[in-house]
Structure formats: structure tokens, C-alpha cells
Length: 226
Length: 95
Image (cartoon, rainbow over all chains, first blue to last red; front, side, top):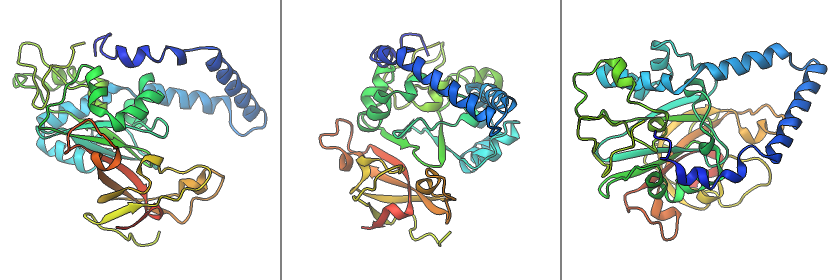
């Protein structure tokens, strides 16, 4: 994703960038953490381990899943039917009570992920969500004007394509399996993974490939290149 | 868990009456009619968990699909656009 692609959303959110408000929340959280440690509910070690776990996952995991699915139809079938099992095949441990579902973009359907109630996100695979994903603006507008939101990210969805929004408000986390761009037939799995950005896995972007026509089916404009 | 009451293809209406406190059914789908897409499994009830409860019995969870034009007056997208949301069975009634 180029730096200016989500301008519109980011700009309107300068008011919630680190601020006195955020500072107060952080101070409160530190105070609660200190109390929990003091009372023996949890140890500093637990906090550190959880932070390390959160930091260990990244969108690169999602890119590997997508690239493997593009080159291996059997893996693609597994990813779509049992995302946890597919992740484990690539050494990504997403075990836990939360379920994962991968939704597939096709020439007729483009998927977009949001959590309107908070910021549910497939953290066990992709790590932390981007700030805009947690913003009130994205959460409210992605459900009732998804095409306008995607346009602000530089993604125009064709009139003949169904936009399918997934509101992951309960116990299931979603990721998008984008379509493989044309012109990438000779590329290695690793090179393919390099085309898949975090935003493609949320659905506000699609992978594109320079040197090929970048109008992935269903999109009138190419997604911006990194 | 109680046996799942709905099957894919069933038409369902989301309960319109709310309840105070923590729920996972956003206001914009309440009272709206959609279609069961798939059964997602049984999960601890978040409305109990949020208040220190056991979350038991587990509640069946469904992916429910809606036409966007049924959810929003003056929806500006295309008529084929859809919204899918995961809802617990006790929020759903046959439509």
C-alpha cells in the first residue's frame, strides 16, 4: 500500500492520534497492570510473553498462506475449509478458541472485512490490526458504504461484481484470499507472497503486478503499488 | 449446546428488542431479515462471559447473510451487494 492510499481515512483521524486522551488511557492501563501484578493475578513475565506473541505474527503470515494457495490447489481447498489447519501446515500456530475463516475473491465477488463492534482481527495469524481498522469511521462506513471506503483506498470495484462485507463481530476471524494477478505465472511462491500486502488480506486492496495489466478482474483501477 | 435450530437457506429475522449491557448483535441488523449461510459452531455466550459468567451453555453461532439494500435506506452500492455477520442463535427467529 502506498503511503497516500488511505489518506482520506487517516486524515479525518488525526483527532484520535496519540493525544492527551490516549495518554490518560495508557496511564490507566499501566496502573491496572501494576495492581494486577501486585495482587498476584498475573506476572510481568505473562505480560511480556503476551506482547512477544502479539509481535511475532505479521501480515507476512497471511501472504505466505495466499501464495501457497495460488500455487497449490489442494492447499487452497484446505485454506478455505479449515484455515487453522492450513496455517499449521506452514508452521503458523493459530490454535485457541477463536475460529478462522478465509473468504475467496472471485471475478464475481469481492470481500471486505470489518468488525463494527470493536476491532476483531485475525491477530493469531496477522498480528495487530492497522490503526484505521480500529477507527470509528472505518467500522461504521465499511458496512454501509463499502464501495466508497474502498475507493478512498484506491480500489474501484466494478458494477457487475458483488461486494460482500463480513462483519466479524463474534467468535470468528476473517481473512481474504485475493485473486492471483495476471502475468505472475512464472513467479515463485516467495515472489508471489511479496505481492500480498496486509490491506489485500482485509480487502481494501488487491495484489497487483507491475509489467502486467493490473486490472484484476472486478476492479477498474489497479491498486497502488507499495 | 442445544441442537442447532436453523439450517443453511433458512430465512431468519434478528430480534429487534435489545437488552442493556454487552451484546454482540449490532443495532443495524436488529429487526432485519436475512438468510442462514452456514453454521459456525457453538461458542460460550459472550453476554454471560462479559459479566464474569461461565458462558454456558454454549450458543450456536451462524453466519447470516443480508442484502445491503435491506439494511440501509438509500444504499449507494449495487443491488447484488451483501453483508454477512455472525449471530448467536438466541438473537434469531424464523422469518
